[in-house]
Length: 301
Image (cartoon, rainbow, N blue to C red; front, side, top):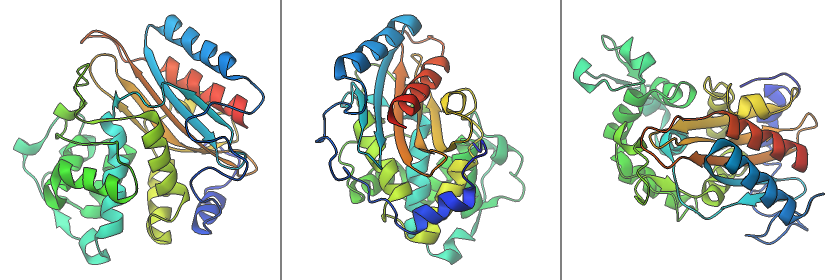
């Protein structure tokens, strides 16, 4: 979501220049340790536990200022359902491994292939879309049928998991197709990640050199154009900051948002936030994610 401030061109130029190597910057806290930037660990823990009590949700958070190394963490290594957040990995995998002629290949599907939340593919059944157009739809509007068509073409859920491993993520796993992969059943490790793992993976894809520069720029452009961030990170990130993210939601009150936001002077913050309830029919809430984004930006700017 674009909110003014640093231009999209400046954001992409920073990524293209390889200005940030994803990992702990010099002087940063060691992996797994909590914030060293203005507020103690107990203060952060208290804040997030209060959010859990207020909203009746279990939270998982990792936020990292890539310029200073300051971090926020709350349940960083607990598994949460990844839901549609994984579509960034799918798009990145295709951009990295598919040559340009393949990205321009037109794929088709039938009405029998359509699943819920497929606004773009429902409207284009007759003529289909190119691989690149399907990837853009998966990221920007979270189109589920676009996601399934791409996975069918390029290697399925196992292929996305293999891509995650190839960029250093040993935790994130994708096991099923949409919409079943967003079930979010407690205790089921299928289709899950941890806040720490996915924060590092998003940082690697957007800020590091896991993708060639044109592919990284294209992925970042799609994430900047995400249309589902408004009620969540989009409501917590300050005016003048840029936001490139991907949301997700499922049953059991699961709602997630993971992305990179840039301060007006261009410092990147990677933020991963996960929420879940206890009951199958629990409502998905936007407010906890907006509160997490606001806290991360306030504490780590």
